[in-house]
Image 1: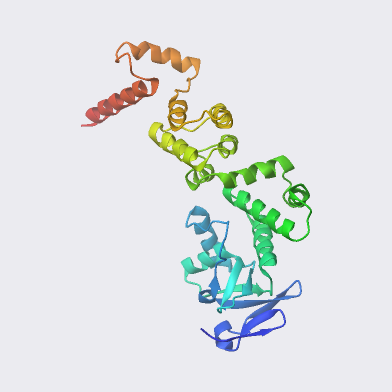
Image 2: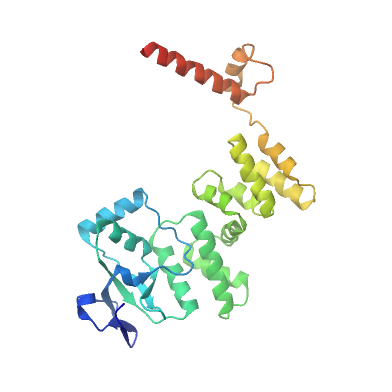
Length: 294
C-alpha cells in the first residue's frame, strides 16, 4: 500500500502514477481519482449496496458517462480511505472493471463522518424503510451528543431536512427495534409499514414467533392483528401460542369470492379452509391444462 502524505484537508499519495494526477475542483474542494482498492466501506453503513436492477442501471450509466458525482472519503489510520458516500458508485465501477473513482477527501472526526455519510445518502437517492430508520436514529443520537437538548429538538432538524413529520420520523425509528427477519420483510414489502411499527413493541422472542408464523401460514399480519398482539403484550397475556393462533386466522375474502367458493365447498372435506379449496382447484385446473396439451 503506497504511503500517504496528508496536506491540509487532502491526503494524496506520493506516487502520482497511483492517482494518475487527475484532479478537478468542485465548490472549492479538490476531486481526486483514487484506486478502488484504497476505498473501504464505513464500519457501520445503514445504506444497502445490492447487485440488483438499480445497480445494473447505475453501472451502465457510469460505463457510458463516467462517475459525475464524486464520493466523499476520509483518511484511515491504517491507510487508504473510508468511503462515506459513494459505496454504490464504487460497486458499479467494480462491475464494469473501472479501476479508480473520483472522490473528495476530508479530515473528519467520527461524528462528522457519520453525519456526512447520512446526509449525503439521504439527499441522493430513494431510501428503503430500514435505511431511513437507522439513518434517523443515528443522526438523532449524534445531534444529542453535540449539544442538541433532547430527541424532540433533534427531530426538528430531521423534519427540516427530510420533510417527514415528527410522528413519522419517530415511527421510522421504531423499526430499529425489529429483528432482521421482520425488518427485511418491510424492505421487500412482505410486511406493511404500519403493522411493522406495532410489532416493534414485541420482544425479540415474540417477533421471532411472528416471523415463524408468517412463513408457516404464508400470511402478512394485518394492522388489526398487529395492534391486538401489541395490546396483549402490554397486558402481559401474549404467548407464542397466541401469536400462532392470531396469525393462523383466515382473512375473509370479498363477498363475491365467498359466494363463488360456496358453490364448490360441497365437493371438499368439511374441515378444508378457503385457501385449501382454492389450492386444490388451481391444482386440478393445471393438471387439466397439461393433459390437454399432450
